[in-house]
Length: 257
Image (tube, rainbow, N blue to C red):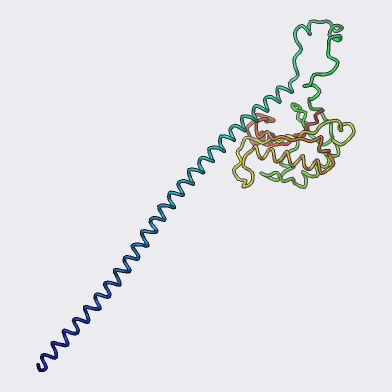
């Protein structure tokens, strides 16, 4: 063969070796591609499933939100009816025309021996030194700005001092026969900054309950105590100015026989 034949043989061997290396590299890349393709497909399926689950949860959450809104609307309607019923029950009945025309002697004979229920259950007009009274409801008015921390039902130091004096007063013999009803009221501004208080209904009830609890802790019998929250539906004034809203934010303590 000579030297020329040896050179040709070397080139052929090098070509065969290079071909083997190329096939191995191709196979390796092909396997890697298939693995990545399978990985992408799996995660696409996972994402589609997660999306379907998220949509299902969102729809379920929306259904619950609608249920809550319906219940809140029904609660407000019931509270409004309660306020109207209570207002009607506390109204003094007007005497009939025939009663007005009778002589004093006849009227005295026919007058009932006991007062009507709406009279005996009307709040007493307390004359407790240092406390303001709402002339419309006869309730002892507690200024919420002084009694409570802003936007909460937590009693301030000043508020506790005020309630201690009130508890001592309503436990006096002249007021001991009265029930003590605590009523919470707010203004019409919605609750937006508090993380713990949802709305004015909750705030008015929480503050009334806080006053009740403190009066009880200061010796007022729990048998005498009750509370209610009226949100902004029983305003002290219809004035929507800043000062008017401040007057509407209050807790009233009523002495009911």
